[in-house]
Amino acid sequence: MKLVPRVLALALAGSLLAAIGAAAEAQQITGAGATFPYPIYSKWSAAYSKETGVRLNYQSIGSGGGIAQIKAGTVVFGASDAPLPPDQLRESGLAQFPMIIGGVVPVMNLEGVQPGELRFTGPLLADIYLGKVKKWNDPAIGSLNQGVKLPALDITVVHRSDGSGTTFNWVNYLSKVSPEWKSKVGEGTSVSWPSGVGGKGNEGVAAFVGRIKGSIGYVEYAYVLQNKMTYGLVQNQAGKFIKPETASFQAAAASADWAKAQDFYLVMTNAPGPEAYPVTAASFILMSKHPKDPAGSKAALGFFKWALEHGQSLAEQLDYVPLPEPLVKQIEAYWQAEIH
Image (tube, rainbow, N blue to C red; front, side, top):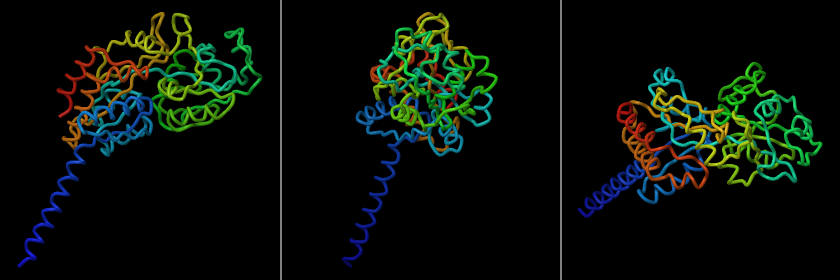
C-alpha cells in the first residue's frame, strides 16, 4: 500500500517539472536575422530579462536567414535591414515595422591612418568595390586625401558572403551614386561581387578587416565602436564629408516620411541634408499576421514595446538612433491593426 503514495508523488513531481519546463519555454522569445542590430538587441535582451524574466533568443545569421526563418515559421520574428515590399509581405502573410536606425560605415586596415582621417566619395567607393581602384596610393584616393600618407599597398575588398541587409543598404547606396555599379552589379541582399573576400555577418567582415592589411569593408557603426576600427568619412549629397555618429544618422532619418510608407517600406540611403550621413539605414522586424504561436508573438510585441519606449538610452550608447515618438505610436497602432 505504501507504493501508491510514492507513485503519486513521482507523478506529481513529473507534472511539476513539465509545468516548469513549459513555463521556461514561454519565457523565451525566438528570433533570427540581421547582424546589423545584434549589438543593441543583445543589450536590450539583457536589460529586459533582468526586469521581467523573459529572455530573447536571437540568432544573428543575416537578413536573408531571418526572412527565410520567419517565412518558414521556425521563429517568432525575423529581422532584416532590407525591408520587404508590401506585395511580398501580403504573399507571405507578414507584418513589418522598423525597430532601430544606424549607419553602414567603410572600415579599413591601414597602418598609420587614424579613424575619420580618410575621405571617400560614393563613386570612389563604387570603383574600389568594382576592382577599378586597386592600390591605396591610387591618385583617385590621394586627390581626396592630400596630406595623408597612403601606402603602395594592394586593396583587399571585404564584403558579406551571406544574404545581408547591410549589403542591401551598401549596394543600394552605390547604385544611387554610380551608374556603372548600378548597371554592372546592381543591388539586393546578395550580389555577384566583382572582387574581394566574403565574411559572414557584420562580425565576419569586421574580423577579416581586422586581420588583412590593406583591406576595406563595410559594417554597421556599432561594430566599429566595439572593435575599435578605423573608419572613413563619406561625402553626402550636399558635398560634405560626414562622420558616422548619432547626429548624422538622425539628420538622415529626419528626411524619412514614414507616414506615407505602406508597411513601413522605406530606404533612406543618400538622404538629403547638409549634415546627413549618406549610408543611414533602418533595421526591420518581420512577424506573422496570424502567428502559429500567439503567446510567443504577444511576448515578442511586449519586448519590442519595452525597447521602443524604454530602451532609447541603451541604443544611444552604441550610436544607434532611437525611433521618434510619433513613429513609435504609428508602429504600435500598426500592431493592433495587423498582428492577431
